[in-house]
Structures are given as structure tokens and as C-alpha cells.
Figure 1 (cartoon, rainbow, N blue to C red):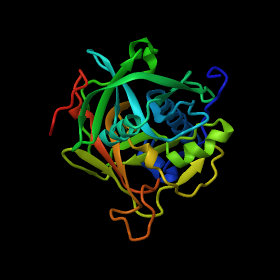
Figure 2 (figure 1 turned 180 degrees about the vertical axis):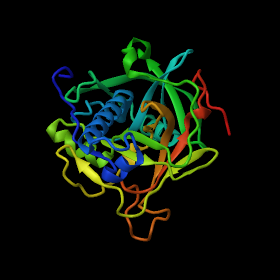
Figure 3 (figure 1 turned 135 degrees about the vertical axis):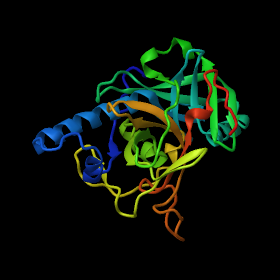
Figure 4 (figure 1 turned 60 degrees about the horizontal axis):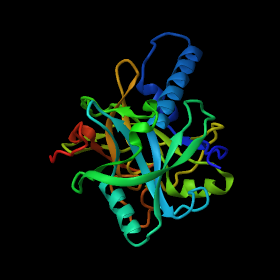
Length: 294
């Protein structure tokens, strides 16, 4: 059944015209050419993020196509030393708590078959997952599992020297919000959210994405407008910085989401897709998967 099930894309988030204004690729060239170039770049960035980003979920004894208990997002990593998976420490703790009470608990990854936009994402059962390192203060965890070295190399993101980030840098990440994933299961569709934003502030352990309320625009595949939505499952997503030659480099892991604005705002829903995003620097993760404290 795994071979015929198609977990497809459904929606994304971007910044629309505000985002376009951040990259001045041409000064006087034709607007149509500039927009076409920008669209091609965005497609490439989304493809890159989807290649290296997996949904990480767990359930009890069944395929996630039938039952989805809880989950988040993660990244497959390769270094000169080994391969491993990165997610949040609190995500790993939630899985450990779930599996400690159930003898038939299973952990799953979504692995895309290729870079084609229509390529399926196949549910892969993680066998014997083992923690390499975790740091609660940084909210980072690394783990390995049986068969990780047999997976195709192109799906793994290189963890080299992590580049520095600064205020105003453009970053992208792709995550799997839980509500969206559950909504897509009856349709055999794996919904994800692709986000493009600029860095608002940078600290020693984390950097933050923050925009004024109402300025983050949500669009679907048909370029129609969508309202903000709960995006908690995006925690653990790898965050990529756009370099000067318009390629992407891994710089962080999504740790926390909140409502729009730097405060929760009373009854305002939390973990919203247009809210603040707190991202931990990947510079704390070493080539062997260990985590160096700040």
C-alpha cells in the first residue's frame, strides 16, 4: 500500500509583494521578467525545503494514513561523520512519553520520492530510534535509527559550518501543522505550510521572526487567500537562509510559535501561522550529533 498512497502538497504561506520587495535582483528590468525569476527562485526554495524536511509522527500499531496521534517536523542531516535526525527536545520527549505507555507505538517519517512537485511522500517506519543528544534549554534533539544509512543521500541536508544570521536576512522553512495534516488524511493528502519571512531579531541561542499583525499573507496552490491557522506541528522544522547567490543554507530549527505579536494577547489563539517564530541556531549541533551547550 505504501507504493500507491500519495501524500501530496496542499498549501503554503509566503509574503507576497512584501517579500518580493526584499530582493532587488534587477533595477530597471522588465517587471514581468523579474516576477518570473522570483517565482522560479521560490519554486526552487520550496523544493529544497521539501526535500530535506520530514513530518515526524507517532501512533499505535497502524499506518499514519489511517491513524495520526501526534507529530511535528524534523530534518535529515548528514555530516562528514554520520547521518542523524534533528527535531526539538520537547518533541522527542513527547514521543518517549507516548511510547513508554504503549508496547506497539511506532514512529514515522514522510520521505518524498523525488523533487517533482507532484511526487508522493511515502510513510517510512522508523525502526529502533535512539537518542544521540538532547538539550532542553536549546530545545534541540538528535537521534539515529536502524537503516538510516540505507536511505537515499539526496534527502539529507549537509550540516557544515553554520553561517551567521542577522536582522533582515530572508529565511524559509516548511512544516507540517497538525490540524492541516489531520484534515488531509481522509483525502490521502499530506498538507504542509511553506513560509518565507525576514529575521526580526537575533540572540545568542535563538533568532525570531516577527511581523506586524495582518502583514503576513497566506496563499494556497491556486494563489487564493487563506486565513491564518494553528501551526504547532511546524516545531522541529529546519530553517534555511537565502545566501548572496540565492541558494539556501541550514541555519536553525523552529522551536516555538506564538500568536501574532510579541505577546499572546489575551484570548488570541496561540501557535498561529502568522505569529512569531522562535528558531534555535544549528551552530550548537556538532558533526557527530552531539549538542554543545551555550
